[in-house]
Amino acid sequence: MMRVEVDGLTVEMSGARVLDDVSLHADSGGFVGLVGPNGSGKSTLLRCVYRALRPTAGVVRLGGDELPSLSPRESARRLAALPQEAAAEFDFTVAEVVAMGRLPHQGAAARTSDEDRHACAAALEGVGADHLTGRGFLTLSGGERQRVLIARALAQQPRILVLDEPTNHLDIAQQLEVLSLVRASGPTVLAALHDLNLAALHCDRLHVVDGGRIVASGAPHDVLTAELLADVFKVRAHRVAHPETGALQLIFDRLPVR
Image 1 (cartoon, helix red, strand yellow):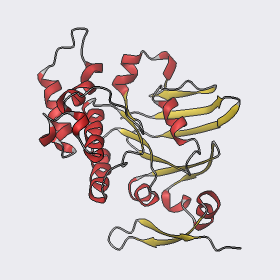
Image 2: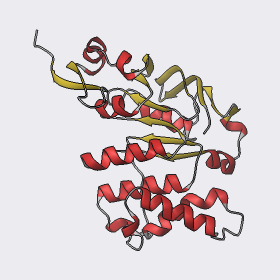
Image 3: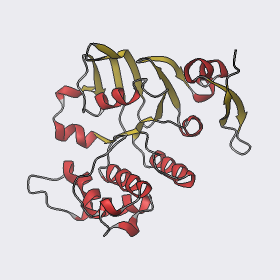
Image 4: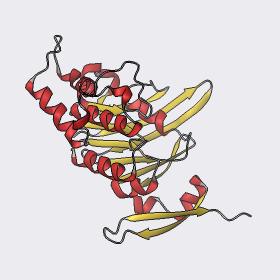
């Protein structure tokens, strides 16, 4: 587990400011969610954290070390990422895709060790995809591909896990299972989540992103107010407690037409 810090992050693209002086942190071992409407800047922020995009200003720190000071191999040992759209151009088998998660831990010869094999097997079993080992990745359904990609990230055994809409293509049971698995796997998690009820259920802390800025931060119960949801998401929300866990759940309706 390792702390993530984002300090004064600004990103400009084609003359437009996509992120504007964003600061946040994810404490070691925490599950921190980013929520916000489409185009609010969530994915851009995460791309800066997992080194796919260089910010115009500001800094990202992993375990206190500024990201540019770390070699790509060292940052890959600390952090694994699951982008929103993970392209696959070659039809690797599922076993080969998951084994890619072990590359940061291997030497120049890239020999597969017993530890590598155990990590891959455990990750595939954990996401319920061990029966897919010999299948070609391109033959899988969207939900199966997503589970395999999550297994690859877990096989990397990162101390920080960055997820951009990790429940895409998953059915309801798989959504609940995968997020519970990610939480139980141990790393610090920073995730952009589309489903506000899933975010309320699984996250310790939420940051609401709107127009490239953080407009609210805190525990889900404190952040996801009816007023904020109307202002940011343009919906009317009714807050209820889960009958078993007591966790905040939301029922949505259209805002009244004025």
